[in-house]
Image (cartoon, rainbow, N blue to C red; front, top):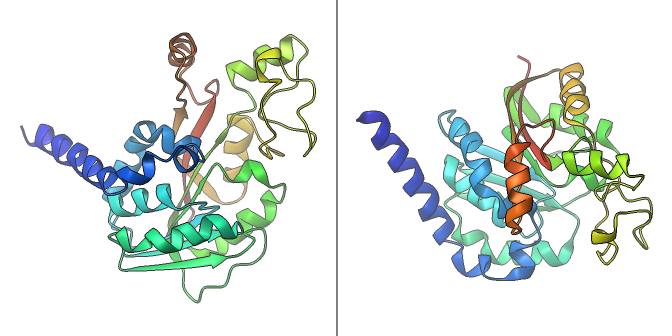
Length: 260
């Protein structure tokens, strides 16, 4: 009975948090700016794991409009948020809505997270939702994450999977994976369904196996890993459910802990 009540309370807590930003979620430009936000239910089990860790300070790298940043912060009970991005237009909206968050303090940083981040304290959780694929400076980013995290702190990442079933099929047929672009001007060599898509700036992605090894070689241990997908097409969703492992899924979520 107690476990059922805990499940109900947590499910209700997430619903209450999402309702706080319901009007913003109706804006297609904002809601559609984050794949992870559109698949928040698949992120929830990871957030539930973090909710019991007493995390009070969070830094989000590539926060964009900040909607997902605040939903995560509010759900796990964060008191202080550092929101980092270089898109001034998105940061301006984040600055307007930050008062809705239950966090007591929100600091907006217009900063390139490939460069050292000095905030005068360490944080317990660093998040990166769909931002790493837009930069090539992963070594620098990971060094920043290690420097800003407390020992035993968490790094939560979501990103496209180079080894997804979609990309494996594309490569088998001789096409460029959609999630890895070779030009900022136009998509080249992609399969026909993607030819009318615009460039989104995906310049670097990894397979789940490679990314897991990368984190481990840089002083992190893997705590959780989950698939991430959310498509409107019923057939594609069915295939996604069949290949619902982090190594084959369209995207993956990784929760890692900095070694003590």
